[in-house]
Length: 149
Image (tube, rainbow, N blue to C red; front, side, top):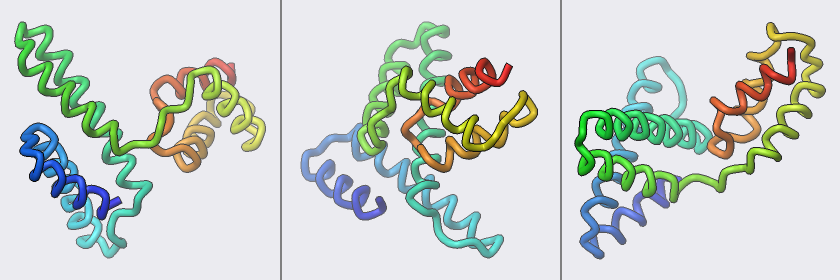
């Protein structure tokens, strides 16, 4: 993944695409920050799965910011945030459709032997391990909750 970001940064610099260049630099900075934090506690550098989690978090942050900017009547800033989301999504695997997510939730519930809401965390951890960056975990959480009731 790191090589992909480095190559994409070179390409965006050559193309003089300021938005893409800035967003890729933000991604690289977030990864480097996590590497430094891990080094402080004796962990390994960030893995590709952790990079997917970082990208997911960045998308969520930008989505929240865009909503706030829309509410504050700042459409230009909201548009900027949405453009960054589009760049970040370009590095993530394709999202699994909602119908398939429900099936995956059901299979994880039977796989883990979950019996009630107290087992919800166990199910969500399995989903996050198996499908990083491919599922909207906020929606998946609601589905698992409904299935466990």
